[in-house]
Image 1 (cartoon, rainbow, N blue to C red):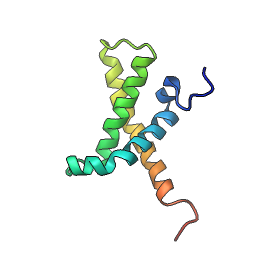
Image 2: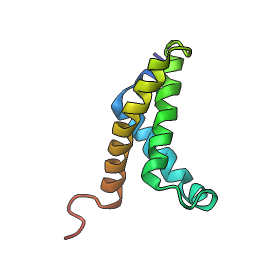
Image 3: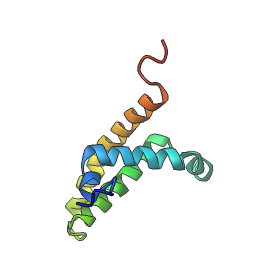
Image 4: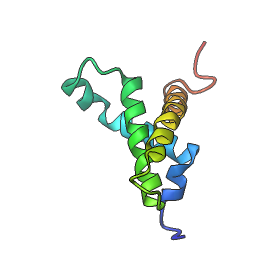
Length: 100
């Protein structure tokens, strides 16, 4: 493993790495997406971003792109990753001890 890498494909396959990258992608693109698709809820956008990240990570780690199970599992896990990214966002916007 290259120690200069902050994210690896293996880390993006795991909950922590996928959630963190989902959080960053959604935060940096949310304003643009709100302008382009104003009716798309942020939580659904986060699921789509998580699905893309999880799918790419699985394919990069050698999964067979013709196997439907790769996409099914990535879709199911995308909801968990998006929920975790939402919690990261909540803690970033409202750190513990910052208010009532």
